[in-house]
Every structure is written in structure tokens, then in C-alpha cells.
Image 1 (cartoon, rainbow, N blue to C red):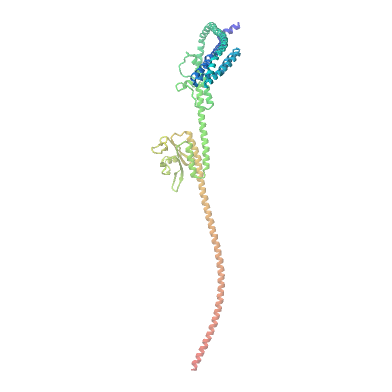
Image 2 (tube, rainbow, N blue to C red):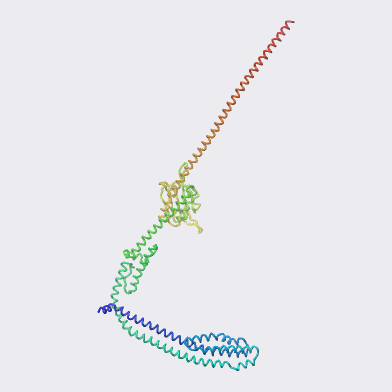
Length: 558
């Protein structure tokens, strides 16, 4: 009873199993009969080949031998003997094929081997006859021709061939009978399958139609659930083709699987096939809508992560560039504008550094990258003048997507083009603007690029401030060194003057002493001279007195 219930419940399966078993038996018998048919077809073909090969021994070999030697005898042309030579070369091959086929069929091939030797001897005999013709031994040739060995070969062949043909005829008859029996068996089997299969097929059709209503209901529910939980294309619900409903469900599940796999591999560019602006409101809460939202969120996270990595990597490289050239303002300016222009994928760039003179501060072009020289004929920009001077005054980033006519041009091998975007960023450190950078590009700069440039500006401003501080300290140090050098020079000069003064004083003392000594010597000498003069004068006076006395005596004597 239980078995009947199970059978009734699974009647379709039972019927299909029964039909399948019949089909399997049918296929097996078909293959078996096909094997018999093929085998007998091959047997009949082999018999035909053997008979054909046996016939060739006369129709080809004997005829070629006889005709070739007679033609050569008459014409003595080498090409007339060609068929005999060709037949001689193919004797062994023909006998090998014939022997192989007969051995395979279990035939006694002893007589056939004897026939092979007879053919080879006859071929040598034919060659000897040709040689007689070549040496013009016609009498010998005629005697050899009169022997009519070809007839003997034919008689031997005919005896063997008659037996072979009879043997092959029996084999072909047996094969044809088995072949026809196999064909008949296939026909009987197909008729039996047809008689059993038609009622079975009718029952299956009845069951299928009976179950079709239930399946339609399930398909409707499947399509509704597919639209509700997986993807709703927004089209009218049609259940006329169950295959399409199932395929649609499978396709949606496959698409969801591929969608998830692509997202897991980081391929956020994948799109849900069929999802558009019209049916998007219908898919907000199902799998398609949730996966799409998740993809958009992950895409945004990836974009932000890529921008963060781009910014961090750029700041790392840029800080290294600034650090490597922070001791030279000119090199620092040139490397800064070169790096930032390339990293921002801009086409032109200029760096303006704040300068101060005795009157007031101004901006000076410290470095530029790929800018048209006509733009920077004047390297000095006053505070508040133009967009650069105004940007310094306001201290705010400025981005223009519509540039003033003739402001600048981007030059390339293709000609000149007006930039599509101009970005001017004050570079600040501790809320003090140290420089202004101006970048021109054919494409509009994105927000993360502007933020990167503002952060990079802090490095530049800090470096410029450090350079200025270093320059001031260097100037002060140099001034201090100059003053110290001047003081050392003055001190050395004073020391030399003091030494010279001391030497002069010592010389003056020495000269004073020498003068005093000279004066003493002169005084002593003058004293001696005066004494000598006094004595001389006294003597003269005495002489004068004596003379006067003498004169007075003379006068008195007169």
C-alpha cells in the first residue's frame, strides 16, 4: 500500500525511469547491432579488397608484363617497358596486402606464397627477355616468348583464385546474413519502444498538463519574490513563458553573485544590468538596490582612500624635496614649482615670494614652470594689484574656470590653448602668507587637489620662513663676523701702533740720552773752548797791553 502511494506520488519519475531504462536498453542494443553491422560491413569490404587484389594479379600484373615486353620488342622504346618495371616494384606490396587479409580471415596462405615466387620468377624472366631485345638476340627472345610462361602463371593463379573467391563468397554471405539480422533487430526494437512509449508519453503529457496550473502558481510567486527581493525591472508581469521566469531569476542571482564578487575584488565600476533611473525607485529595498548602494559607498570610500594616499604620498615626496633644497632659496623655489606643477598634472605654474624693501613689501616671481614668457615680463607685483596681489591681500584660495582674455596661454606642439582652470593659493605658515603659487591647467582642479596644495603650501611657507630666518641669521652672523674682524683688525692696528709708540718712546729716550751725552760733551768742549779762548784772549790782551805799552814808550821816547 505504501509502495503504491509512493509510486502514485512519483508517477512521473517512475514513468520517466521506465522509459529511460527502455531507452538505455534501446541505446545499448543499437550500439550492439551497430557494432555487428560495422563488423560485417568491414568483413564484406575486406572480402571485396581481397578479391580485387587477387584480380589485379591478372588484370594488372600479367597484362602489364605481357604488353610491356611485346611493345618493347616492337618499338624498343624504354617507356614501353615502364609498366613492367612498375608492376615488378609493386608485386610484394600487393601480395603482402592479400596475404594479410587472408591470414586475418584464417585462410591457408601457403599456396599464395608459392604464387608470389612464381610471379617474381616471371618478372625476372620478363627482364631477361628485355635484355635479349637490347642485345638484338631475337631468336632467343622468340624462343622465350614461345614458352608462354604467362599462361602457366595464369593457370596457377586461376586455381588459387577460384578457391579464394569461393572462400570469400562464403564469408560475404555470412556477413550479409548477420548484417540483415542486426538491421531487423533494430527495427523490431524500435517498434517495441514505440508501442510502449506512446501510452507512456500520453500519461506523461496528462500529468504535465495537470501539474501545469500548480507550476504556473509557483512561477507567479517566484517572479513576484524575484522582483521584491532581488531585482524589479519595472516591466509588466508575464508568466506565459516559464523558461523566461526561471532564467530571469537565475540571471538575477548570477548577476548578484558576480556583483558581489566584483565588489569583493575592488571592481567598483560594475553596473547592475537593467537598473536605470526609471526603475531605481522600485529597487531601493531589494538586493539590487542594496548592492548598488553598497557599491557606491565602497566606491566613495575607495576614492577617498586613493585621494588620501595620493595626498600623503605627495606630501611625503614634497617634504623631502623641500628638505633637500631648503638651504638655497632659488633652488627651493624652482624645485617646489616643478614638483607641484607635475604632481598636480597642471600645464603651467609660477611661485611668487614676498619681498621687502625700504619702502613697502611686494611679490616677486621666484620660479616658474612652462609659463609663457610674455606673461612674466614684469617679475614684480605690488600688493593688491592683479589676481595674485589680491590673493595675497585676502589670504584666500582663488580658483577660476573662466580666465580673462589673454591672461595666459598653454603652449604645446599642437599650438596654443587657453587654460580651463587657474588656481591661486596663498602659502601660509602661522597665519602669515610667505608666497603665492599660481597653477594653470586644461582640466578643473578637484577639491582634494586644492587641499593638498594648501597643505603643501604650509611646508613651502615654513621653509621660506626658515630660509629667511637663516638668511637673516647668516647676515647677522656675517655682520658680526665682519665687526669682529674689524675689531680684530683695529686691535691689531692699535697693538702695532702701541708697539711702534713704545719703540718710538724707547728711541726718544735713547736719543734724549744721546742728546744729553752730546750736550754734556758739547758743554765740556765749550767749556774747554771758552777756557782756551779766555786764555787766548788774556794772552792777546796782555800782548795788546804790551804793545800799547810799547807804543806808549815809543811815543814817550819821541
